[in-house]
Amino acid sequence: MIMNLIALVLVIGSVTGQVMKEKVENELIPFEHFVGTDREGETKTLAERMQHWFVPGISVAVINNYQVEWADGYGEAQNGVPATADTIYQAGTISSFLSALTALKYVENGTLNLETNINDYLTSNWKMSYKKRRDNRVKLKHLLSHSGAVTVDEFDGYTRGQTLPTLQQTLSKSGPANNPKVELIEDLLDVIFNDPFTPGTQEDYSSGGFAALQQVLEDVTGQSFSTIVQQLVLDKAGMSSSSFAIRDYNDINGVAFGYHCNSSEESVIPGNWNTYPESAAQGLWTNVGDLAKLVINVAKGKSGDPGSILNTQSTNDMLTIQLKNGQGNPRATEDGTFGLGPEVVDGRASSKWFFNTGYNEGYCSEVIGNTDGRGLVMMSNLGCERSHFLLGELFRAVAAAYRWEDAESAKIDFNTRLPAKIPLESPQPWEGLYKVEPYDTGIPGVGVIQPFQSVYVSANTVQVDQAVCIVYMYPCANLDNVYCPTISIFQDVGDKLGQLTFTPDGASGYKGELYLGVVPIVDVEVKVSLTRISASTGTFPTETTPRTPSGNTRNTPPAGVSTTMSIAGSTTSPFTGSTACRFLSNSFIAVLCSYLAFVFISFNC
Image 1 (cartoon, rainbow, N blue to C red):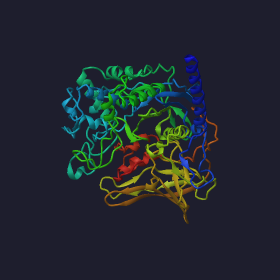
Image 2: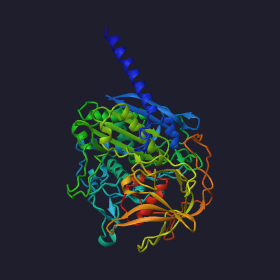
Image 3: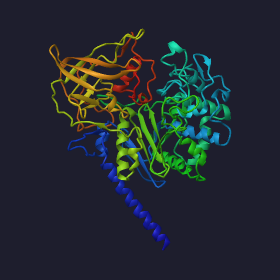
Image 4: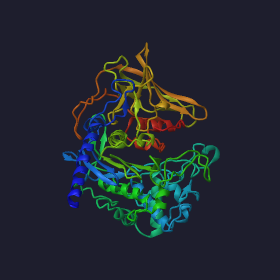
């Protein structure tokens, strides 16, 4: 009798999971929100939105009541190879979540102390410094909460055949290392104060900080990072398909290739993926099932489950936001979102949401968990500049299907929407190829800047260059003759970033204006002028254009469109970018992020 009841419960649970799965697959809530129209409440299928955002493949796992209720894969992991729930992806910066758990386990057993300056732990040659002088203000808790004011927001990785640096070479920027030196960030007002940003006062995402954490762990334990994290995290959570080892490029079975998005095709990354020797920051290979096990393990740690990696106190410490404006020593200058590892927000009752984004070249992932046993894991094989939109749409679909009413009020940062009017139809009189006029910053040593040379604008898309993914554009809600591009999942429509306007001009027919932001202190708005040099001569692809993950040729803008940035004779930017800019490589707004850095503009891309 008891066995029959158990079997019945399992059958009911399976049926319920399948129903919810189909609901999620067919009711994604789009990023663009057509408020006040008959399309305000529209939903889309997962297949439609994968096509819309150019995502070749994605795997998903939904957690309910501390169990994986369902998991599946969609699209392609490689050309002609379906993505499944078992497909292995690069987890990117989700690696830092596991690294934080590893460090906190050593805090828990007394080996490490959150309040200790990391230089006191380092026995190798490298030390945390600022302009070649040792700086002892960065504590272990600062690295874990991204408040250490440490350089290198994201490592670029190494292509197939490139020589990989050692960890010491990465930290000191020597040998084959392709990243800036890992050290304290230079204050923009350094010309006056000759000092770095103060650790512990503000958040600035730093993969470089987690490379420093890796060195701390290896120096203190005398073991390799991969050995430590295997014993303390992967084995404990039962993550048998996961590894921090450098993957052989011939080992492609069950692996998702990373893809670029551009205007002419979705192309696989040369060599299929980049290699990241910066293991603690970006080196994890895993799948959605293993990450779901990790989410469940951390959630159970809140109640002291004996199988959890951390005990109750350590779990509570991890899930406590570290920066409170005006508090601490030194005093924080902003309210933070990071705990000791993941970002944290309050959920319903006394629960906590915790989440971590995973970004590497060609990959984008999210882990979202709640201490009451809910969660979602998503992994895709396209960079976050486009995949992140899809992940946000999936999260909203899951939250709606499972009635996670606290998901919206929690203000999880990628759960955003763009208020917009109904898309325009082509042709519009202002369509065409525009020249981007130089902007004189008036700043000595910076001078005249051009973020790119020209831009092609259609009724509902913006295209900077064939090597950059197209950006959708909609008439902004509650505004007349103002257009809002879908530039970032972190988009705050209140700050007007990226807004475009077009007005008649006698000489060229039309001129445009691109709004970039406000220079702090002097409160000066920065707007780039656009001069049309030719009317529309072609159209961009629509959502219904047939696509495949690779080799798909689409319509392209007129010849001559270029993204070359011209800044004081240089075509590159030394600026590492804001926290949000780390997601935007190979994208339209990434160019703007670098551009804005030179005029000292504070914003979230």
